[in-house]
Length: 404
Image 1 (cartoon, rainbow, N blue to C red):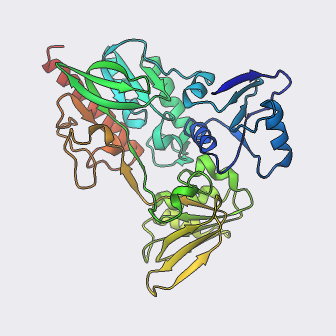
Image 2 (cartoon, rainbow, N blue to C red; image 1 turned 90 degrees about the horizontal axis):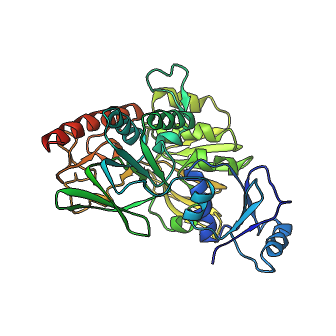
């Protein structure tokens, strides 16, 4: 059972996670901190001998991980995500049982829509399972968003959006996952969390975005969160002075690869095709780095290692020859898969699984979609905010048609 203790003398400057690479609960807790952009220090008890004795001392002789120590001295042992959310002061339960509009997803599309709707005087609830700002929030720098002539970090962009929507009275639930959307007579309902708590609404906006696509090769599943990553901002700092391979020849791969050079001694980019798809600006930026190399026309075939990456089997697509590469970590940026599960079998989707809409409404009456999850979306932060605004206006007209 999860336990909580307080030792006044233990007050680290940042949250400190004592765990191991093979521990699934450790990976989950670290993922939680990463998604919510919470700084933490990781101590691997398999690498730091004294850490084992320390963990055992805290846990009355038991080697229980993760053991997490907070700056105020509180210790959480094997905490659930819900316990971590409470400790961090995140709101996880709605204040009411019914809202005019519920928005699932707190990225640029969802937050922009909530801003427009709240300004219209509509009771609006946003539910986000991870950090606010979506993928834009974990991007190192956004250089192409209008109005920010010198660029803006993803974290600051997300913080500004959050402050703006809260100013207009938008209620936000964090670290809370929606498990179902369904119609109950004239109302729509969402079900949240393990408690199966239902919240009603007149309209729902799905702005759940998309997740990074996996390689789908042997060995990947076992190494995710250990030496395989999908977020350079979240995990790049673990590779100080080490060698990293980025897989992906588009803008994301090149942009995140450049960011990783702040930590890693060598960052190489593996491109599946004969030429990268990244912009010329980003290609030139990579070419200017002495510690970056682009490997063209190669594909990853297997990730090898027991609880830790040992080698990467790749194939030269032209010659069909295979070779083993040695890197300390792999960051994957090969495209997006829509987070459409809530409407699977309930709304029409295109061949790629993105949700189809007419005037932003899905084929499920009263349920709208905006942002990266929607068919035809351009996968850009600026476009997502525009879609959020368009969805809000469409929802307003829909509510008028109901006589609301």
